[in-house]
Length: 361
Ligand SMILES: *Cc1c(COP(=O)(O)O)cnc(C)c1O
Image (tube, rainbow, N blue to C red; front, side, top):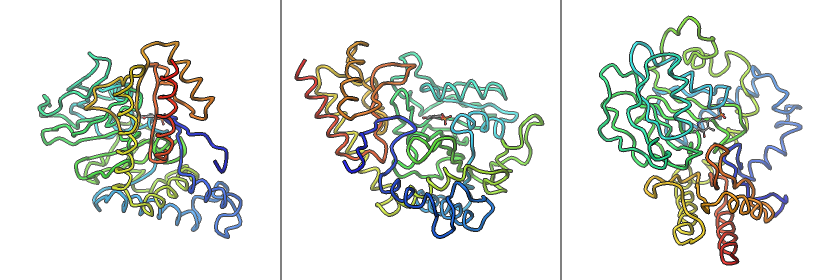
């Protein structure tokens, strides 16, 4: 390979498209004749404002975000949104949560600090290995919203069908599936995503929220930074935003637009996931961790069933140029994260390697 890079199966921060990294490298000392790097530039400058405006416009085009939705970037990664959502939207009612794994569980514990929370469905009984039936949830009349983590990065499950929210607002954590396939934004009141999984550098989240849901006021204790109203009104610039992450994400948005948009990404991602799961389904050594119907397109969790053998696989794959196949420390096993930037050849090469590994057993 040109830069001696490995196939990086990290769940996040994760691979970025090589052509994007090349562009960033070319601009790092002097961004388009400005005489400086984007890292060194005022966020109030004209040149940065243009980077910002293009990033938002390109994201709007990619996802087909309707006019009545606000788009902004917030620091604090994914985790800050666990608090920001209830601080803004859990008021006198109930926050309904679907509990499907690590990230929805974290969102639930955080929300409980700010108001009444109801778990309306859960897959905890089977180690979060499936997505519960959400077609007829018991949602109270005074529900403020229904919250899901649409793709559970650590457990490896994804919603193939959105919950029936009985007319209540749907909020989705799309961190590890953001821009992996087309999304009908109007199905949601709020979508947020930490960008370091499928888009850019860590430390920032994108928030897409329907205008009429943005509250006028906030709890008195809430830091001003946590206000969706402030973030929306100030165009992510109440204070100094994560300019570098915004710039890198903007590059990825342009790259996706130039490469067929989200339909093309979906086709590629489905093809890659099929290669991997077809391999798992015929393997005698490896098996998948989750209900096949609920498998994630992005995070493929699997195991040999033995901790020692899994560790041996991690070591052998790493030595062969396939990095970061260790499952999350909280669940163990193995995980191949195959986001947009992972080429099909990477998945094919990994499958070949694992087949060979198995054959030599
Ligand atoms: C990684 C991740 C988060 C947390 O993101 P941080 O930026 O580390 O706070 C939240 N939700 C999902 C689905 C994730 O994959």
